[in-house]
Amino acid sequence: MSRVAQIAEAFYALDRSRLQGVLILSSPLFGGNPEIVTDLALQRSVPTISLFPDIARKGGLLAYGPDLQALYRQAGAMARKVLRGAKAAEMPAERPTRFELVANLRSAKLFGVTFPSSILLRADEVIE
Image 1 (cartoon, rainbow, N blue to C red):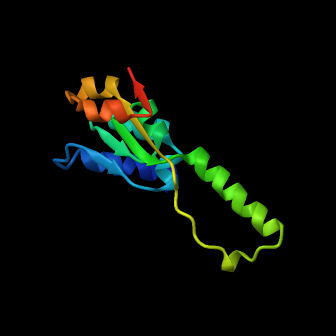
Image 2 (image 1 turned 90 degrees about the vertical axis):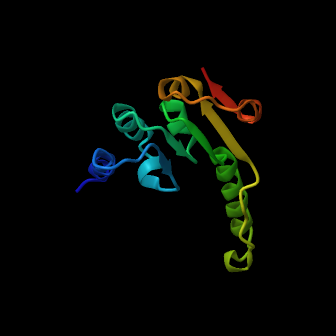
Image 3 (image 1 turned 60 degrees about the vertical axis):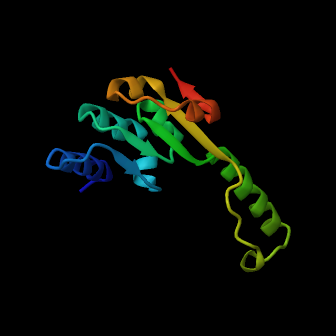
């Protein structure tokens, strides 16, 4: 079964359940296919919350997670240290320091959801 077929199968299973929303956790399968995820979710009228901003930008309800661009810069800085002689095994693990909140008002309206003003005020991006 292809990776895309696995996403579709997961959403088809929603047809047989009483779920009223989906929380999408860290997975390259979902994060790498935001259009497919949101198309399937919107077809089934299922709001999605994810840590991937692109899912919220494409039609998901809300995203909150590490700022991916900041993570790439952080990884680049660590790679630079290794290239300059640091031993990777001796380097401390680094956690994300910047997080991104994306709220999609179009999807909220579609699903009959009203975001509290605290979400809208703190959002890095609000899609209208």
